Image (tube, rainbow, N blue to C red; front, side):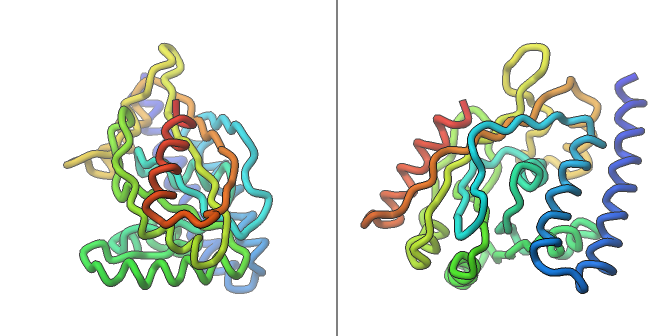
Length: 244
């Protein structure tokens, strides 16, 4: 029964993704930014419904930008969940831009791309994040730089935090957690680690035990003279508390 349910949801997700592709390619060029952002959030909320993943939001998302949002990183599902909770521009590895269908959806959603193999590219991305913040946008980053196992946070890199310092923008910490409905423990379904493939992780997510996606927003704060390393460490502690 789980396999049958997973197959049905996978088919529904593909159909919803294709509708999103059409909206981005055909309609987005004619729409103002505010309408595009609201559409992306509504599309993400609907996709979670199609996948059968309830969303629980705690705390208060930023009503508007400028705001840099920092969150822990567990899964490919994180971006969809955060989009559903509050629209923001994401920073993602450049490979995503070239993924069939997903690349178009990510680009249409406002994603900023980074070449992780090129150290100098981080400075280019920091500059673009700062520009977006100055323009009054919300930008979401994962300072761990990669997905973790959900048990312990990886160190936070301070490079992307520098954008908020340069733009004099506040930063809001966010904790993500996928909670198994039956046990209340961390769900292993959405994990995306090591040799996991996107399709394999997606199938495990859909065919596994049900879980709830929980997003907990913390209190936004300014740098107030802190450098990026000190601020990144303090933000890591806040995110760690929020994800418990």
